[in-house]
Image 1 (cartoon, helix red, strand yellow):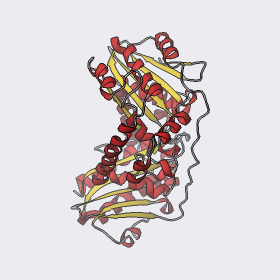
Image 2 (tube, rainbow, N blue to C red):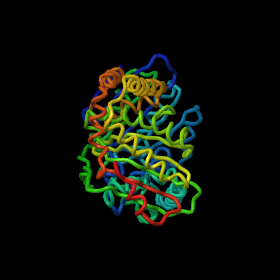
Image 3 (spheres, one colour):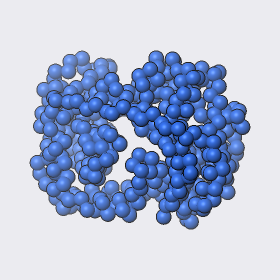
Image 4 (spheres, rainbow, N blue to C red):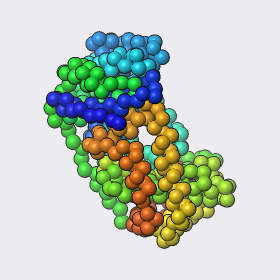
Length: 421
């Protein structure tokens, strides 16, 4: 059972005590990401994530930060999204005090050295290039840009080579002062710990945390009146596509139906599109459908790498299954399979302390409340076939379709003519 304490300064501390493990994961989440940026500093959330490991007052070099943790067998890392940035350490429970001390140190006391900023600009630029050079990774970036255009929701989380190169130390300091504040931060600790001990240590370590208000993000503007296509020409032997629609956000209770819908379409090896595109047509090696439900945006999208010769058949097959979902009620057998898969995958994914910390911490950060795994399973089991069909009929409309194509094509028109339901 998780426990939560809100400190006097507004910092939220959650623990998920587990007796069945000797591991502890300490995760510090900040409610800021690329959706909170301006065009000039696009990529700053991600860049700052890198810079927090470059040295603090107490631990002045990257080695001083990494060595004490890795010397105990622990691991540390960080991640950035559109709405969050996270820093985590996973250690032997005997080292939990050290781990919390390290993560508090980088959060509060990072030096952001000018020399390191200069070097890291090259590192991050190469990271951006790496993703762009990988079609399977670049297509999701194109997908966001197609849906949201020139606004934060449509920008690359890592920024561009141009925006990254122009970041200054003052930009970083101002952003930290603005966003890294108590009311915008959640500490979630999962594993072999006692709640009162973590609260006591966090109170001491984070007593210097900023308590000012943080800068809110601009509202996402959603505009679409007809099917849209984004095309990027590359001389490839395989065409990479993303085909889908806008969906419901995290705030909509139908996100549960949306997740089951995506699972049945392309979330498992026995799903409709995996069977159709890979097993029946032999058109794709990878194919999957996912449901994204963010605080203010949502989507259902199928991504696939298909042979150039079968691109038209593949698109038609995906659209056919979208239409079937909207017009034909699910059988009891298929609905049960989708529910059991979602529950089973969640059970398995929550085996580790780091997964549990993320499960509880992210909900607290993004939704300000936590649904426990049993409560989530009850919500999944309560979904009816008619509800999934109704949602499918609402989102799978011709004017809502979006298609990203990366491959040896220069003309959008043939693809635009295919976007019919």
